[in-house]
Image (cartoon, rainbow over all chains, first blue to last red; front, side, top):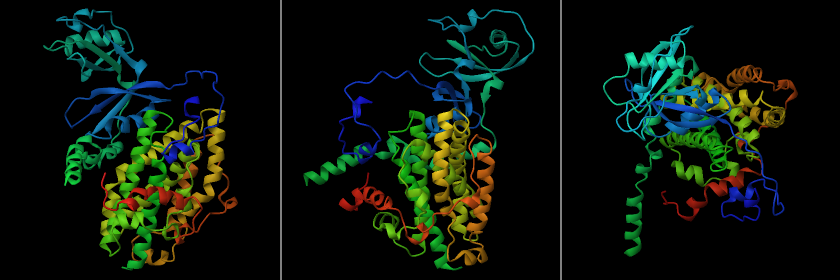
Length: 207
Length: 251
């Protein structure tokens, strides 16, 4: 916090911050951060959920609340869900023309069976996209079952499996959350039309 | 329909939203974590949007345009409750105020979906989802921090006790209560207060926070008739700084 001690900002909010004047140094504080949660967004009805990124949060419910504004405050969307990062089971990443499913082998079946959601990475550098669900007794078994039912023709670079019960879904009542989003064009940078404003300003100055 | 009664109702709701929105926007860039900074700022923006909807209705009823109304009045011409103008202080206070205010706000607009004044009923239906998020955000935080650590519980408890008398000022009775109820514009502050108390009891009851008895609290009133703390005028000066330099400025 020593960074701010002698700051005399033009922003009145900065000058209001409750920062004590301190000495030149203070002990380095321990790293104090929340865990991470993975966020998936559904843009339109009928479109698959797509992984968009992470949020930090103290629990899954808070993660849902924070994910909503962090990832869906701009472009239209109808639903999101979140899961603890530690709930995501990841296959080996592949190179070149190797399909991730080539590395998936039968690891044996186990009980009890539960539902898993399966995601594919179809382009390097893009997001994982939901492709369907399977019933399995373990994440390894889920990948094996996905190989049989969801692998498809396209090359898959990476596969994720998440136990369905580990996901905090959007409830029917929560769908209201995005009711007014299509009207909030002002949150989209392109709606600001910065270039037009600059042009108008320069013209007014040059007159 | 009694226009004076309707205007009084719209002004106090709009002023609450504008002042609350501006106050909460002061956290932009200073939030406790990036995700929360974004969420809190978005909600502040929503609040100002809600106030604009109210000021637009007032303009339809013959009042001045929203910018003039928002930026040129002095503190004693504002009808917000004092709760909304208090300085942000630490985040625990801002969260508690957000919780107490938005719990009332969500119930108020739920009631207003039944208003006989059609434009108000329409806005109430429209912003339902936004208010659902505002209460979800507030309640999830309070539930989390209200049972998390000794420090989080004691800090929220202290803020809760400080904010409660001010929060009762939300329900300061208007001279037009009977008219609003008779005209079916709004069920009235007494009905809202009753529902709000039940909801606050239910939600605080799910945490380790303690709610003092309502009888032990003295409501801080006066805001609805233009009596404010010394904190409102500096807020208004800051909020209207650009407008006062250039009323036509757009950004």
